[in-house]
Image (cartoon, one colour):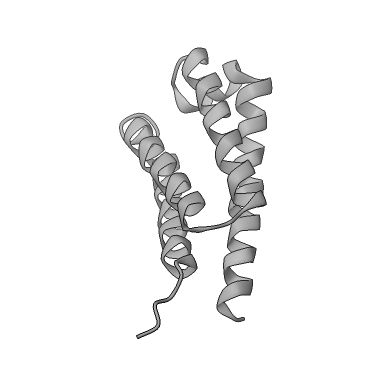
Length: 111
């Protein structure tokens, strides 16, 4: 698989997964809040953040979109590390994938 296809595939996979969580947080914030052990308000705000992230990844997958998603995953890791360590590991893995995709999607410099 060439780099452009890998970046597009990553943006689609990460974007759709993020869109799922955005929908969960916006339509069922109490449920997500209980699952993450955060307040309903916090869960609702995460939904808006994830909606922005998913929209950016699915519409214009560039290094900035992947970096934004990685930062969001880092916030999730910090939030979940104490209460849901297994879920925090999953968020860290998605963050690492986003970092790798951000690096791969940066324009190359010609010497």
